[in-house]
Image 1 (cartoon, rainbow, N blue to C red):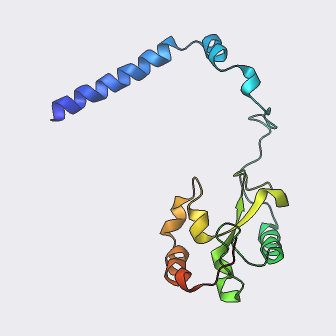
Image 2: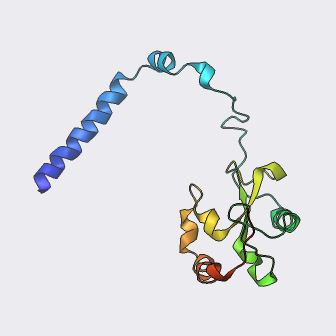
Image 3: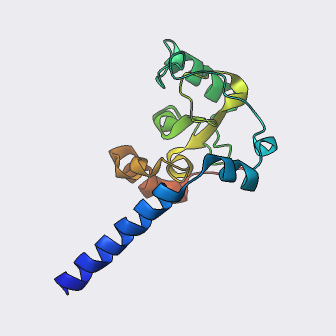
Length: 143
């Protein structure tokens, strides 16, 4: 079995190399025209900000969650009790932590937040485990 696995690995890497060696940018843009690109990048590699939370984000996040009534905007679970506030997160829709526009926010319970792309790591947190124990008993709205 180890020999066949080694052969398969070599075959896959040679396939990748063949694709790389035969790639032609002009042919790519014939197959995928530029008119399919709907927005141009805002930043260059030199001007792009670091994807970090801005100063004041904790206060902005708190204010946003208060404005929407401490409810998950996905499943509607009510997290208005002060001891439950830690389970309601402010998710950045475009994935850019520095983008603090209200239209880029969505308040999500930790359960819904963990289901977002690139957020499965939240399932390893103690808060997620605690929340999953109490979640079935929490009131929900008809979101």
